Length: 259
Ligand code: 5GP
Image (cartoon, rainbow, N blue to C red):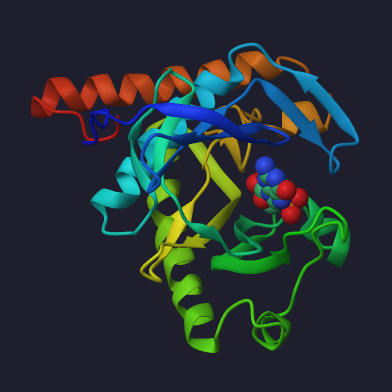
């Protein structure tokens, strides 16, 4: 369980992204990542503001990062930040890849390969996109990742292994919240000592989650596909994650999921 780090205070805003704000802190080793209510899709083509999304995503993301740490999967997560929408993280050099894990085929995969929607993969299917708004985040083959010097072959193998571990951990996590994880995107970075760690956020903005009973989308697809009830979906997931934490607290006297 992570507690609020003592003595780390945010200072100036370093970067305002499409969905998140990055703050410097009074300690150069740490940053504060603040999840905002901004939402966007189609590389910024469609934008809106969803009240309460930042707090909901941060609660979910902190719970998931705590779980990853408990399973021995290295992340840059340190603990809660100065408000309910923010967390303190170790400063890491981002690796310019989006790593996608899929249990079932949907979204861009189905468009690309014209396969059946929700085709189930044998295990987790891992693919990479090159993180560049200019280039439109294209899928990047393993050989290109190495040829461009983004990762060594060995590091790529390690990232694939970590992604599979993340996949299994978060699939179980969402299953405990009566959700089915369909796919997700994660990012990695390098700490100053060279260690590769999971960075950024893992939330309904970066995962597709269906309600296990009804099949209803509980993630950003509600916004992407104009399905309505966008804020409600984020609140529902946050409520389920908070409920899980309460259950853990009462059964163990502690709290496994929540930071
Ligand atoms: P797809 O490639 O099918 O569009 O997305 C696969 C998974 O990765 C989905 O869970 C989606 O939410 C996530 N994902 C892919 N690219 C991005 C991105 O640029 N931003 C965010 N937030 N999620 C992404």
